[in-house]
Amino acid sequence: MPKSKFDKIYADLRNRIETLEYEFNSFLPSENELTKMYSSSRATVRRALAELIRRGYIQTNQGSRVRIIYEPVERNIFKIGGIESFKEAAIRNGFSYGTKVVRLEKVVADEKTAERTGFKPGDELYDVCRIRLVDGMPLILDKNYFLTSVARDLTEEIAKSSIYEYLENELHVKIMTSKRRMTTELATEEDRRHLELADYNCLAVVSGRVFNGDGIQFEYTESRHRPDYFCFEDTATRKKFSGR
Image 1 (cartoon, rainbow, N blue to C red):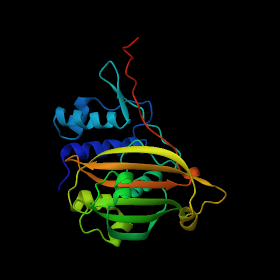
Image 2: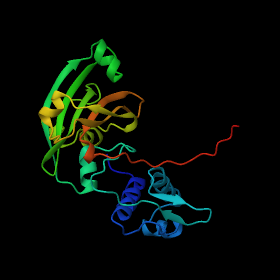
Image 3: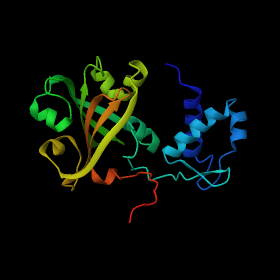
Image 4: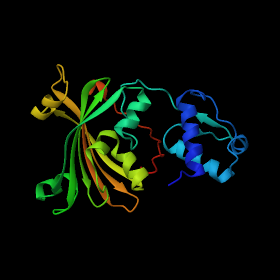
């Protein structure tokens, strides 16, 4: 499925901001300049700008100018604020990355699995476990369940590369929403067996449920990070409190 004009404008502007062609606290070109630059309508440009605002790259002022609020972050930061695959996070941070597939098998959700993941008892799932290597070090253990009716025909090769790329580009799944929670947990024997934890006895654990464009949960994920290679990062806006 070809990318829309809006997607291309958004991706190009985001790249220019992330590579500091447009620096922090500077201003984007005006809407008129952008429409000419991309040979596009004002509505399409505004849609791309709205996405950049939503993702915390830019902020509109009371006037007509749009300010860059994106700042480069330390390269050991994995963001929780967006829906981002490990491969995308590694490329963004400039890491050397790799994936080792520990397990990929079909299972049927029992009551215990359903209660933990949000799927229904009897749902057929792919049970996927992968070790994520960062600069050659095994630092993250990703444990996922994917609904087989959505994530069809998964293979070890796909799991080693990027399941999200496969879902979006091959199966045309629209990945829409993720509900997440972050905790700190003591390391398990499985964590110690697969990861280089050094002297750490705990991990940052991000667990979540991911929904497609039809509102169907198709994934449950549990990502277990060595703490020195994880940091919470998000962008938020405040709404004025109207109560007493």
